[in-house]
Image 1: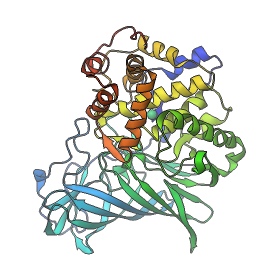
Image 2 (image 1 turned 45 degrees about the vertical axis):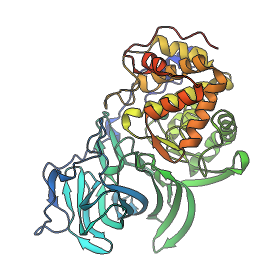
Image 3 (image 1 turned 60 degrees about the horizontal axis):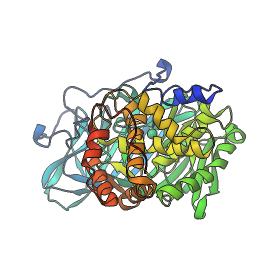
Image 4 (image 1 turned 90 degrees about the horizontal axis):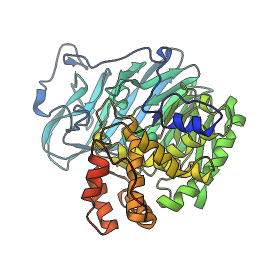
Length: 494
Ligand SMILES: [Zn+2]
């Protein structure tokens, strides 16, 4: 993700300074108007007169993520989500149902889902109605019969909301945003739970079917492939299928006057982009440059790891770019001036995330550098290829401007700070110089291909580095990754 002001200045020097500005973010009050916070006390959601007896803290409120302790839900693995929503842009009301195919990973008589500020009207487990309880950021769902590890369950939650956003610990609001022309979602890291009861942690990836109803004349867009589009009464219903395992924070859901633009990338890769109909002529150049970028990264990172790719140009505030899986999300406002440095940076950064972040996701949020540093390094490589700047110069500039702090140990407030991006890309450049180009790119390829579809930690990356390097690398990572202050100069390259 990139979320910061973008300067469209004319000189590369100015733009380099902009691209490496540490962790600055903008927020427009008119775009973030409501905040739903966890309710302080449990309240029944299906009946005001009856309530289950939730087990309180028996399950805990998360899976132990150090930065986001209440994210995730113990004892369950979501295999598939069926997200069925109906959106009325005139009232900004969303109603629907999410069905979850869940496998229990431990014995239990209750499960939780992450759901903040959402009112569930009905909840079933295996077709039986149960009385679920909203308990702060959790929806507590009693099981009709005690379950054992390995049991498969179908959970269905009917719910609705308006303007669902939360103020994330990272410092800005995320969730569901209404726009003049429709809506979009921005989820990273913990916003999906503001509009979708889910297991909102990147360690649990699943497949998805999105069935989204909008008024006739509008388009609904989600990750994956459009598998059905029909008219039902005065609504159009759009069904999208995401078969690649995906973390909740990577969900794309757009409504508006969009046109779906199909194309073909390297090796027959389906390209499925979406642009606002009025923007199509302006945005075609960015669709057109995409195959060359995929081809370039294929050569270094291995084959593009997902079933399809594309770009989505939405009517969000400027400065937003997000690696929504299989189709990166950008703000149209950042792409009205042609294909310059900033556009090349944004397009290449989010594309590279499809390998690093989407195919291979962080197992814990503290591992965010495995996403952002890799995408930043890839962006430097593309900018060099495109003739804008040299990766080595970008790295030197980043090292000189790096604030103290380990890239492997960010706080929640600094999750998207300098050392997760350029500061961590410095670590990768030092690693490249230490082990040489051949082993460095073998490492990046193996990291993407061997872990595709999974979620991994920094320790996993260090293990693979040592395997590829054929030597202990503890001293290197202690010096460059874990140290509060890395060396002031890069190693002499091989
Ligand atoms: Zn990013």
